[in-house]
Amino acid sequence: MKSLNNAELADIIEDEGIGYAVEEYVDIERIADPRTRELWTQARWLLGEISQRCFRARAALEDSQT
Image (tube, rainbow, N blue to C red):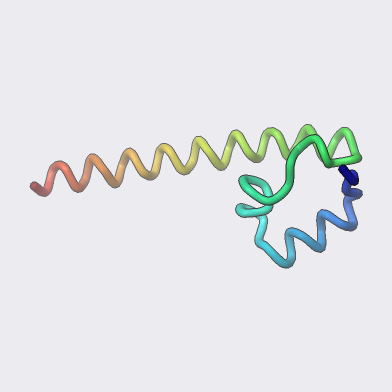
């Protein structure tokens, strides 16, 4: 599996959007730069936390309206 440098990641982010690139498109193991790999890992966790928090809030709102 080919590793990706930061310039290649920039192309992917531009084409796919940062959220999709981080959460779905790029496997962390493919990132060549150690610092970028660390940040990517943190971003994946953070995006997951934001999504869960927002979906829980929406579900609570929907439940309160029924």
